[in-house]
Length: 206
Image (tube, rainbow, N blue to C red):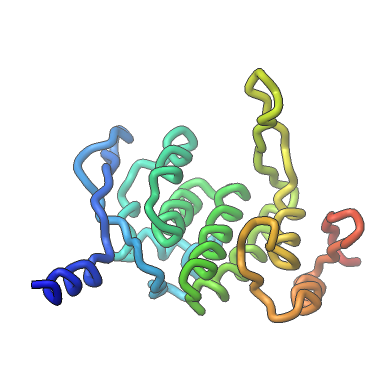
């Protein structure tokens, strides 16, 4: 009996999650969202703008969901795993290609690598971070000023967050994507960018 119970527990890779009606965006029924750390990519550039293969991935429970700027954050908070977050952000990126969604696709891949050591997630995270620089260089995300009484948000350049994530993600509680941070600087240089370590800013290489 104990062995059977253990096998059942080990076999659980999905959890039930409220889904969205693709026409209205209303949450209906359930979605099976992954909680495991194995990432089998449907396409070599899945989650990398302008690739759309994530919408055809049979493992992607969000492929037919009506994702939008209002519901994506709540869905992100409710996701049970970095892998589920990857499918969420990659799906909305495919439908609404903006820098913020490319960055959070990259971050979810980075989190997946940190949580379970997926080699696919590690390499795909690098590609997704690069896509943020290549296609959305001037894009921002918004951070909440928690010390303010009123809800106040301020813009943060994604390119600087990308470089920090590649060079030293320790403050983000993420594992490094490179054995040596100098390798991150070398990749950035090869991609056409320079990361100023003193100012924490990224510029295009002349």
